[in-house]
Length: 304
Image (cartoon, rainbow, N blue to C red; front, side):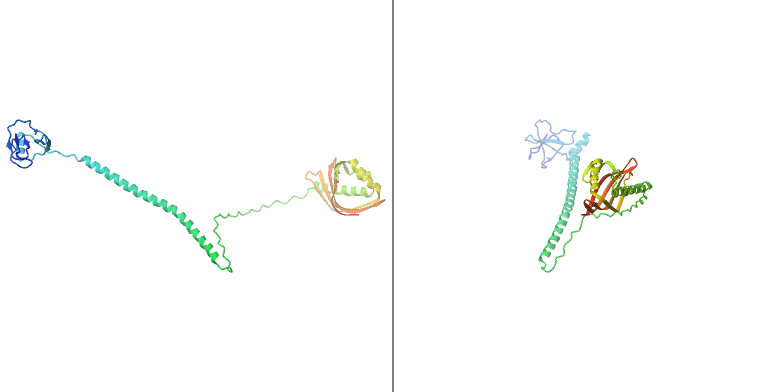
């Protein structure tokens, strides 16, 4: 056992001649002490006098010769640096990702900000233009008429659709039945007039149906109509009547007709009566004969 007289370090290798710490010449120590340097390991354990232990690499040439002579190889300890490399690689990746995300976030923020500010800028521009126009109109002289500002219309103009002209087929000429009915109605009206002038009450009343809308009385019976006509026949000895401007319309079913005409009369007898009216008579074909179902005046021209 050898020890350093200067630093007090002890060495179990008797081949060492100098202290590995300060280079002082080692001295032999007679005390028996458990060796602190174990052969067969990569490092030599040196025990301080204070009892603390630490590992130092063996670089003494004499010890290397001793190890070679004993056939024992002392390999220097290798430091495992794999963990630190992985740590720095992960750290660098995180930093790069943070930088990329930061740049992307700034870009998106700028795009959104520009998109929102553009409509507001346009609105402000339009408002400024409107205010300038209003100010110009107010500042104009009173004798100068302000030109109205017409805002552009945003409504879509509807495209006119060309109207197609539908040609209706010409109406068919009146059938023979309609013309025949008109002729029959016209003859019935003139026969009714003839019976009045001849003062034939029975023949005159033969032109009426059993019920008649008689002037202001609706659904008057044939007896009520006859009684009114009989008073006129008894009152006047002469009953002259003229009919003009007659029109006859026949229904689509062909069993109803309406005749409108101007009637001018001149009655003389115990009393006198004259006048002119626009009369309307409705007839219905019953059992093959046209009979009066309605009689009224549409217009009074004059009466005396």
